[in-house]
Image (cartoon, rainbow, N blue to C red; front, top):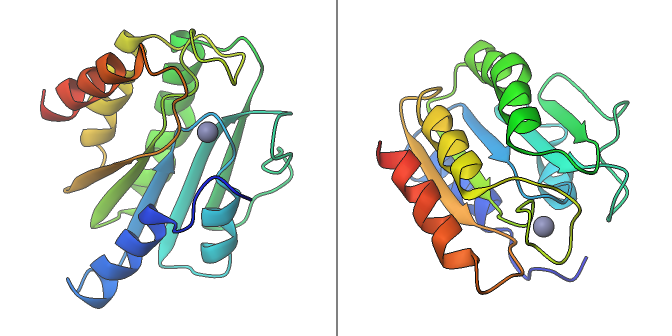
Length: 170
Ligand SMILES: [Zn+2]
């Protein structure tokens, strides 16, 4: 819908399957917007689990509570959600779903537009929250890789990426 020409995480998932011989790949999308393109690409594909945490209702409008299937898990988050809500959702919904799917690789669509100072969203996630999300994501699959997605405050973005990298290697 205009934010990207290529879906990097979808290409990575297909590359992992076609070129690296991996079977089951999970995608965790914590960008504040619903990952509608990624969802559309893998909706009918039982080998790719797609999990999206996003502000809802919000642009682009998709990803509501009724939009789910065996390997598509949408977790709509209320405006104003912060570290506590995100980490609660991760622990109680995201981590069990990924554990059940048992992927060989987890790809993270790591957007930072749920940050409290991002101009596009109404969320309150902090650098510590992204660090902890990354730390926990690393623990749910044998291999984890991340791609940078949204993030529209160029003053805070470097520190948020650094915090997430810190969590991924912790
Ligand atoms: Zn976004």
